[in-house]
Image (tube, rainbow, N blue to C red; front, side, top):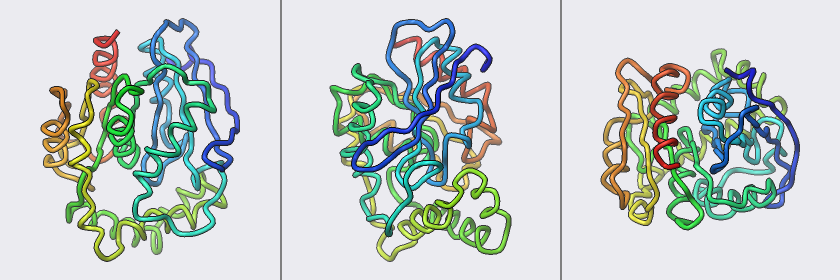
Length: 265
């Protein structure tokens, strides 16, 4: 399926930083909103694998996958991330990314983990600029299972193979990228972070995807999003699936996301 999608890598500037992106163009492209893919807290273009191209080929829509500041081939961080880094990405950075990449019509946002939280926040801050949101493994408040998962990841980074695996995708950005992510979530008082109040401002169609065995969140995250948004949300709850449904249950996610997108057209 990915053979039917043309890929173009490029650098651009947004929010004062050089960022790296990939534009996806199906050979049989059809009119409609652009799909914007927002990666997880340790993610990059490469870590998405073939999924973005597969969803673009399935729907016929253009796609944009980009690496946020500090990730992958984008410009590296110069200091610690602020506590409100998700809100800043949604409110300040993402609008500039869309403008710099000539995405002028309201897009459909597909976000994974941190990317899902950013997608939901963008839809809340800019309801008129959002066609739809697909939230995969998103978090809208802090659970102990999330903090425990981050502590496990921290140990794996220090003592296991996680650092080596991340370095393949993030190169010289790896150390600051990982510390910037883990240190925010493990700071004292982080358990008080909560974005549920913003959800009521989301008026676009929303699809919520999560694995039953997610290492960073429980069904409570799904229910909070579904109850919080203004319009009824669709839910894809996946048994025997962890934190990355687009890898671990790819066909189910492609099917649900494809139907969700086509229902909006």
